[in-house]
Image (cartoon, rainbow, N blue to C red):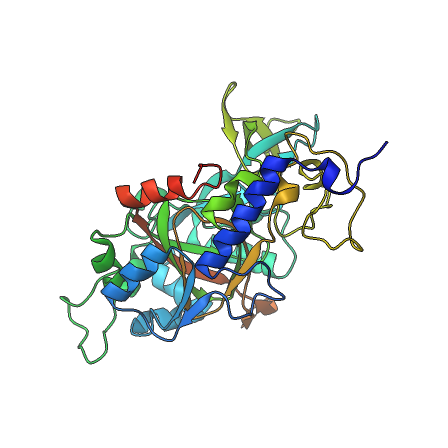
Length: 400
Protein backbone atom coordinates (compact mmCIF):
# COMPACT_ATOMS: atom_id res chain seq x y z
CA UNK A 1 0.00 0.00 0.00
CA UNK A 2 1.30 3.49 -0.82
CA UNK A 3 2.68 5.37 2.16
CA UNK A 4 1.69 8.94 2.97
CA UNK A 5 2.67 11.50 5.60
CA UNK A 6 5.24 11.12 8.35
CA UNK A 7 5.44 7.33 8.13
CA UNK A 8 7.25 7.59 4.77
CA UNK A 9 9.96 9.96 6.07
CA UNK A 10 13.45 9.29 7.36
CA UNK A 11 13.83 10.47 10.99
CA UNK A 12 17.47 11.49 10.58
CA UNK A 13 16.73 13.65 7.53
CA UNK A 14 13.78 15.20 9.36
CA UNK A 15 16.27 16.13 12.10
CA UNK A 16 18.63 17.64 9.52
CA UNK A 17 15.75 19.59 8.02
CA UNK A 18 14.92 21.02 11.45
CA UNK A 19 18.60 21.94 11.92
CA UNK A 20 18.49 23.70 8.53
CA UNK A 21 15.46 25.73 9.58
CA UNK A 22 17.15 26.77 12.82
CA UNK A 23 20.39 27.60 11.00
CA UNK A 24 18.55 29.91 8.60
CA UNK A 25 16.84 31.64 11.51
CA UNK A 26 20.18 32.27 13.27
CA UNK A 27 21.70 33.76 10.11
CA UNK A 28 18.68 35.84 9.13
CA UNK A 29 18.11 33.76 6.00
CA UNK A 30 14.42 33.46 5.08
CA UNK A 31 12.68 30.10 4.94
CA UNK A 32 11.17 31.04 1.57
CA UNK A 33 10.59 34.05 -0.69
CA UNK A 34 7.53 35.26 -2.51
CA UNK A 35 9.77 36.88 -5.13
CA UNK A 36 13.49 37.54 -5.78
CA UNK A 37 12.91 41.24 -5.05
CA UNK A 38 12.12 40.77 -1.36
CA UNK A 39 14.23 42.36 1.38
CA UNK A 40 16.73 39.50 1.32
CA UNK A 41 19.62 39.57 0.86
CA UNK A 42 20.83 42.70 2.63
CA UNK A 43 21.65 45.58 0.27
CA UNK A 44 24.43 48.14 0.73
CA UNK A 45 23.99 51.50 -1.01
CA UNK A 46 27.76 51.82 -1.47
CA UNK A 47 30.84 49.62 -1.20
CA UNK A 48 31.85 48.70 2.36
CA UNK A 49 35.13 49.57 3.97
CA UNK A 50 37.69 46.79 4.31
CA UNK A 51 36.79 46.24 7.97
CA UNK A 52 33.06 46.18 7.15
CA UNK A 53 33.62 43.66 4.38
CA UNK A 54 35.67 41.52 6.77
CA UNK A 55 32.63 41.34 9.03
CA UNK A 56 30.42 40.44 6.05
CA UNK A 57 32.74 37.55 5.18
CA UNK A 58 32.53 36.28 8.76
CA UNK A 59 28.72 36.35 8.59
CA UNK A 60 29.01 34.38 5.34
CA UNK A 61 25.62 35.38 3.93
CA UNK A 62 25.08 36.93 0.46
CA UNK A 63 24.96 40.72 0.19
CA UNK A 64 24.05 42.98 -2.75
CA UNK A 65 26.27 46.04 -3.11
CA UNK A 66 25.56 49.07 -5.28
CA UNK A 67 28.09 51.22 -7.15
CA UNK A 68 31.17 49.00 -6.81
CA UNK A 69 32.33 49.95 -10.33
CA UNK A 70 30.80 53.42 -10.62
CA UNK A 71 34.19 55.14 -10.79
CA UNK A 72 35.49 52.83 -13.53
CA UNK A 73 34.48 55.19 -16.29
CA UNK A 74 35.39 52.95 -19.22
CA UNK A 75 32.97 50.24 -18.13
CA UNK A 76 30.03 52.49 -18.98
CA UNK A 77 31.11 52.19 -22.61
CA UNK A 78 30.64 48.40 -22.46
CA UNK A 79 26.89 49.01 -22.64
CA UNK A 80 27.44 49.70 -26.34
CA UNK A 81 28.17 46.46 -28.23
CA UNK A 82 29.84 48.36 -31.06
CA UNK A 83 32.27 49.93 -28.60
CA UNK A 84 33.17 46.51 -27.14
CA UNK A 85 33.77 45.17 -30.64
CA UNK A 86 35.93 48.15 -31.62
CA UNK A 87 37.85 47.99 -28.33
CA UNK A 88 38.77 44.35 -28.96
CA UNK A 89 39.70 44.97 -32.59
CA UNK A 90 39.21 42.70 -35.62
CA UNK A 91 41.97 40.14 -35.10
CA UNK A 92 41.78 38.98 -31.50
CA UNK A 93 40.36 35.51 -30.97
CA UNK A 94 38.80 34.05 -27.86
CA UNK A 95 37.88 30.55 -26.71
CA UNK A 96 34.13 30.09 -26.49
CA UNK A 97 31.98 27.28 -25.08
CA UNK A 98 29.50 25.81 -27.59
CA UNK A 99 26.51 23.62 -26.67
CA UNK A 100 23.26 22.72 -28.42
CA UNK A 101 21.08 24.17 -25.66
CA UNK A 102 23.11 26.52 -23.47
CA UNK A 103 23.67 23.90 -20.77
CA UNK A 104 27.43 23.57 -20.40
CA UNK A 105 28.85 21.52 -17.52
CA UNK A 106 25.56 19.84 -16.70
CA UNK A 107 24.10 16.37 -16.57
CA UNK A 108 21.81 15.33 -19.40
CA UNK A 109 20.25 12.20 -20.86
CA UNK A 110 22.46 11.00 -23.69
CA UNK A 111 20.36 11.36 -26.87
CA UNK A 112 21.50 7.99 -28.23
CA UNK A 113 21.52 5.53 -25.33
CA UNK A 114 19.50 7.49 -22.74
CA UNK A 115 22.02 7.15 -19.89
CA UNK A 116 22.62 10.17 -17.70
CA UNK A 117 26.03 11.73 -18.41
CA UNK A 118 27.95 14.88 -17.55
CA UNK A 119 28.31 17.01 -20.68
CA UNK A 120 31.27 19.35 -21.17
CA UNK A 121 30.99 22.03 -23.87
CA UNK A 122 32.87 22.10 -27.13
CA UNK A 123 35.53 24.80 -26.91
CA UNK A 124 36.30 26.66 -30.12
CA UNK A 125 38.62 29.55 -30.89
CA UNK A 126 36.89 32.25 -32.91
CA UNK A 127 37.33 35.96 -33.47
CA UNK A 128 35.61 38.23 -30.98
CA UNK A 129 33.56 39.74 -33.82
CA UNK A 130 32.32 36.29 -34.79
CA UNK A 131 31.33 35.67 -31.17
CA UNK A 132 29.24 38.84 -31.20
CA UNK A 133 27.56 37.74 -34.45
CA UNK A 134 26.70 34.38 -32.89
CA UNK A 135 25.33 36.05 -29.79
CA UNK A 136 23.20 38.37 -31.91
CA UNK A 137 21.67 35.36 -33.68
CA UNK A 138 21.00 33.81 -30.26
CA UNK A 139 19.35 36.99 -28.99
CA UNK A 140 17.01 36.83 -31.99
CA UNK A 141 16.32 33.09 -31.62
CA UNK A 142 18.10 32.24 -34.88
CA UNK A 143 21.01 30.10 -33.63
CA UNK A 144 21.42 26.33 -34.04
CA UNK A 145 23.98 26.20 -31.24
CA UNK A 146 24.61 28.35 -28.18
CA UNK A 147 27.88 30.21 -27.60
CA UNK A 148 29.03 31.57 -24.25
CA UNK A 149 32.30 33.19 -23.22
CA UNK A 150 32.70 31.51 -19.83
CA UNK A 151 36.32 30.36 -19.62
CA UNK A 152 36.59 31.00 -15.85
CA UNK A 153 40.39 30.91 -15.86
CA UNK A 154 41.03 34.56 -14.98
CA UNK A 155 40.41 35.23 -18.66
CA UNK A 156 40.88 38.98 -18.23
CA UNK A 157 44.43 38.57 -16.96
CA UNK A 158 45.60 35.27 -18.52
CA UNK A 159 45.77 34.89 -22.31
CA UNK A 160 45.66 31.09 -22.49
CA UNK A 161 42.04 31.22 -23.67
CA UNK A 162 42.23 34.39 -25.76
CA UNK A 163 43.51 37.94 -25.57
CA UNK A 164 41.01 40.08 -23.67
CA UNK A 165 43.64 42.59 -22.59
CA UNK A 166 41.84 45.63 -24.09
CA UNK A 167 38.89 44.97 -21.81
CA UNK A 168 41.26 44.41 -18.90
CA UNK A 169 42.71 47.88 -19.53
CA UNK A 170 39.21 49.32 -19.42
CA UNK A 171 38.59 47.57 -16.11
CA UNK A 172 41.80 49.05 -14.71
CA UNK A 173 40.91 52.59 -15.81
CA UNK A 174 39.03 54.26 -12.99
CA UNK A 175 39.10 57.00 -10.43
CA UNK A 176 38.17 56.62 -6.81
CA UNK A 177 36.06 59.44 -5.42
CA UNK A 178 38.08 62.64 -5.45
CA UNK A 179 41.13 60.96 -6.98
CA UNK A 180 42.59 61.58 -10.43
CA UNK A 181 42.90 58.65 -12.81
CA UNK A 182 46.65 58.05 -12.75
CA UNK A 183 48.82 55.05 -13.51
CA UNK A 184 49.30 54.55 -9.77
CA UNK A 185 45.54 54.52 -9.10
CA UNK A 186 44.72 51.93 -11.75
CA UNK A 187 43.95 48.46 -10.49
CA UNK A 188 41.61 45.73 -11.66
CA UNK A 189 40.54 44.44 -8.25
CA UNK A 190 38.22 45.83 -5.59
CA UNK A 191 40.61 47.49 -3.12
CA UNK A 192 38.37 47.06 -0.06
CA UNK A 193 37.89 43.35 -0.77
CA UNK A 194 41.59 42.74 -1.36
CA UNK A 195 42.48 44.56 1.86
CA UNK A 196 39.88 42.65 3.88
CA UNK A 197 40.92 39.24 2.53
CA UNK A 198 44.64 40.00 2.58
CA UNK A 199 45.45 38.75 -0.91
CA UNK A 200 44.84 39.66 -4.55
CA UNK A 201 42.05 37.90 -6.46
CA UNK A 202 42.81 34.37 -7.61
CA UNK A 203 40.89 35.10 -10.82
CA UNK A 204 39.34 38.06 -12.63
CA UNK A 205 36.80 36.90 -15.22
CA UNK A 206 34.47 38.33 -17.83
CA UNK A 207 31.29 36.51 -18.88
CA UNK A 208 29.57 37.34 -22.18
CA UNK A 209 26.46 35.57 -23.40
CA UNK A 210 22.70 35.70 -23.88
CA UNK A 211 19.61 34.43 -22.12
CA UNK A 212 20.09 31.04 -23.76
CA UNK A 213 22.92 30.06 -21.36
CA UNK A 214 22.38 28.63 -17.89
CA UNK A 215 24.72 27.29 -15.21
CA UNK A 216 23.69 24.18 -13.31
CA UNK A 217 23.75 23.90 -9.50
CA UNK A 218 27.25 23.75 -8.05
CA UNK A 219 29.46 25.55 -5.54
CA UNK A 220 32.86 27.22 -5.61
CA UNK A 221 35.40 27.46 -2.81
CA UNK A 222 36.09 31.12 -3.50
CA UNK A 223 34.73 34.34 -2.11
CA UNK A 224 32.89 35.61 -5.17
CA UNK A 225 32.20 39.24 -6.03
CA UNK A 226 30.01 39.23 -9.14
CA UNK A 227 29.13 42.46 -10.98
CA UNK A 228 26.55 42.80 -13.74
CA UNK A 229 27.37 45.38 -16.41
CA UNK A 230 24.56 44.52 -18.85
CA UNK A 231 21.36 42.51 -18.52
CA UNK A 232 20.73 40.62 -15.29
CA UNK A 233 21.63 37.38 -13.56
CA UNK A 234 19.45 35.33 -11.27
CA UNK A 235 21.20 33.15 -8.71
CA UNK A 236 19.15 30.35 -7.15
CA UNK A 237 21.00 29.45 -3.96
CA UNK A 238 21.27 27.17 -0.97
CA UNK A 239 23.51 27.77 2.07
CA UNK A 240 26.58 25.50 2.41
CA UNK A 241 25.04 23.66 5.36
CA UNK A 242 22.20 22.32 3.21
CA UNK A 243 24.28 20.34 0.73
CA UNK A 244 23.14 17.12 2.42
CA UNK A 245 19.77 17.49 0.63
CA UNK A 246 21.16 18.04 -2.88
CA UNK A 247 21.85 14.41 -3.87
CA UNK A 248 25.43 14.66 -5.19
CA UNK A 249 26.12 11.02 -4.30
CA UNK A 250 26.47 9.58 -7.81
CA UNK A 251 29.33 9.68 -10.29
CA UNK A 252 28.47 10.46 -13.91
CA UNK A 253 30.58 9.54 -16.95
CA UNK A 254 32.26 12.50 -18.64
CA UNK A 255 31.28 13.34 -22.20
CA UNK A 256 32.15 16.33 -24.37
CA UNK A 257 30.36 17.94 -27.29
CA UNK A 258 32.23 17.69 -30.60
CA UNK A 259 31.31 18.59 -34.15
CA UNK A 260 29.80 15.65 -35.98
CA UNK A 261 31.41 14.23 -39.10
CA UNK A 262 29.39 14.21 -42.30
CA UNK A 263 29.29 11.07 -44.54
CA UNK A 264 31.86 12.65 -46.87
CA UNK A 265 34.27 13.09 -43.95
CA UNK A 266 33.79 16.83 -43.60
CA UNK A 267 32.92 18.46 -40.31
CA UNK A 268 29.27 19.41 -39.92
CA UNK A 269 27.79 22.13 -37.70
CA UNK A 270 25.82 19.50 -35.77
CA UNK A 271 27.04 18.61 -32.28
CA UNK A 272 27.25 15.14 -30.80
CA UNK A 273 28.50 13.78 -27.49
CA UNK A 274 31.75 11.83 -27.34
CA UNK A 275 33.21 10.18 -24.27
CA UNK A 276 35.87 12.50 -22.92
CA UNK A 277 37.89 9.74 -21.27
CA UNK A 278 36.98 6.07 -21.11
CA UNK A 279 36.91 5.84 -17.32
CA UNK A 280 36.53 9.49 -16.29
CA UNK A 281 33.58 10.34 -14.03
CA UNK A 282 32.53 13.24 -11.85
CA UNK A 283 30.14 13.80 -8.99
CA UNK A 284 27.52 16.42 -9.72
CA UNK A 285 24.26 17.74 -8.32
CA UNK A 286 21.50 16.27 -10.48
CA UNK A 287 18.62 18.47 -9.32
CA UNK A 288 17.50 21.76 -10.86
CA UNK A 289 16.25 24.10 -8.10
CA UNK A 290 14.46 26.35 -10.59
CA UNK A 291 12.02 23.52 -11.42
CA UNK A 292 9.28 22.14 -9.15
CA UNK A 293 10.23 19.11 -7.12
CA UNK A 294 7.78 16.99 -9.12
CA UNK A 295 9.42 18.00 -12.45
CA UNK A 296 10.88 15.14 -14.47
CA UNK A 297 14.47 16.08 -13.61
CA UNK A 298 13.85 16.32 -9.85
CA UNK A 299 11.17 13.68 -9.25
CA UNK A 300 13.58 10.70 -8.89
CA UNK A 301 15.14 12.47 -5.88
CA UNK A 302 11.90 13.30 -4.05
CA UNK A 303 9.66 11.00 -2.01
CA UNK A 304 7.39 13.94 -1.13
CA UNK A 305 7.78 17.70 -0.88
CA UNK A 306 7.84 18.70 2.77
CA UNK A 307 7.51 22.39 1.80
CA UNK A 308 3.98 21.88 0.54
CA UNK A 309 0.87 22.19 2.68
CA UNK A 310 -1.28 19.10 3.13
CA UNK A 311 -3.76 20.47 0.58
CA UNK A 312 -0.98 20.80 -2.01
CA UNK A 313 0.77 17.57 -1.18
CA UNK A 314 1.47 15.09 -3.94
CA UNK A 315 1.20 11.34 -3.37
CA UNK A 316 4.10 10.10 -1.24
CA UNK A 317 6.31 7.07 -1.26
CA UNK A 318 8.67 5.81 1.39
CA UNK A 319 12.02 7.58 1.56
CA UNK A 320 14.91 5.84 -0.24
CA UNK A 321 18.61 6.65 -0.22
CA UNK A 322 18.25 8.75 -3.39
CA UNK A 323 15.24 10.87 -2.33
CA UNK A 324 16.91 13.41 -0.02
CA UNK A 325 15.80 16.40 -2.07
CA UNK A 326 12.27 16.03 -0.67
CA UNK A 327 13.59 17.30 2.68
CA UNK A 328 15.28 20.40 1.23
CA UNK A 329 14.03 23.80 2.28
CA UNK A 330 12.95 26.15 -0.54
CA UNK A 331 15.78 27.50 -2.65
CA UNK A 332 16.29 31.27 -2.52
CA UNK A 333 16.62 33.60 -5.49
CA UNK A 334 18.86 36.65 -5.88
CA UNK A 335 18.47 38.79 -8.99
CA UNK A 336 21.47 40.98 -9.77
CA UNK A 337 20.77 43.94 -12.04
CA UNK A 338 23.05 46.28 -13.97
CA UNK A 339 25.42 48.16 -11.69
CA UNK A 340 24.93 45.75 -8.77
CA UNK A 341 27.53 43.44 -7.26
CA UNK A 342 26.65 40.23 -5.48
CA UNK A 343 28.90 38.97 -2.72
CA UNK A 344 28.32 35.21 -2.92
CA UNK A 345 30.19 33.57 -0.05
CA UNK A 346 32.37 30.54 -0.63
CA UNK A 347 30.61 27.20 -0.47
CA UNK A 348 27.13 28.55 -1.27
CA UNK A 349 25.39 26.33 -3.81
CA UNK A 350 24.10 28.23 -6.81
CA UNK A 351 22.33 27.81 -10.13
CA UNK A 352 22.54 30.80 -12.50
CA UNK A 353 20.15 32.00 -15.20
CA UNK A 354 20.58 35.22 -17.13
CA UNK A 355 18.85 37.74 -19.36
CA UNK A 356 20.49 39.85 -22.04
CA UNK A 357 19.62 43.49 -22.49
CA UNK A 358 18.10 44.86 -25.70
CA UNK A 359 20.25 46.86 -28.10
CA UNK A 360 18.80 47.24 -31.58
CA UNK A 361 21.15 48.56 -34.24
CA UNK A 362 20.69 49.11 -37.97
CA UNK A 363 23.32 47.03 -39.74
CA UNK A 364 24.02 47.54 -43.45
CA UNK A 365 22.38 44.77 -45.43
CA UNK A 366 20.65 43.30 -42.37
CA UNK A 367 18.34 46.03 -41.17
CA UNK A 368 17.49 46.22 -37.46
CA UNK A 369 19.53 43.70 -35.48
CA UNK A 370 19.38 43.03 -31.74
CA UNK A 371 22.93 43.03 -30.34
CA UNK A 372 21.86 42.65 -26.74
CA UNK A 373 24.20 40.94 -24.28
CA UNK A 374 24.45 39.73 -20.74
CA UNK A 375 27.91 40.95 -19.74
CA UNK A 376 29.39 40.54 -16.26
CA UNK A 377 32.70 40.49 -14.45
CA UNK A 378 33.66 38.73 -11.27
CA UNK A 379 36.53 38.38 -8.85
CA UNK A 380 37.28 35.08 -7.10
CA UNK A 381 39.28 35.35 -3.88
CA UNK A 382 40.89 32.27 -2.37
CA UNK A 383 39.47 31.34 1.02
CA UNK A 384 41.53 31.14 4.20
CA UNK A 385 42.26 27.92 6.08
CA UNK A 386 39.96 29.13 8.86
CA UNK A 387 37.11 29.56 6.39
CA UNK A 388 37.70 26.08 4.96
CA UNK A 389 37.38 24.67 8.48
CA UNK A 390 34.28 26.79 9.09
CA UNK A 391 32.61 25.38 5.95
CA UNK A 392 33.27 21.84 7.16
CA UNK A 393 31.81 22.65 10.56
CA UNK A 394 28.61 24.11 9.11
CA UNK A 395 27.66 20.75 7.56
CA UNK A 396 24.34 19.76 9.18
CA UNK A 397 25.45 16.14 9.40
CA UNK A 398 28.30 17.07 11.78
CA UNK A 399 27.12 16.42 15.36
CA UNK A 400 26.68 19.57 17.44
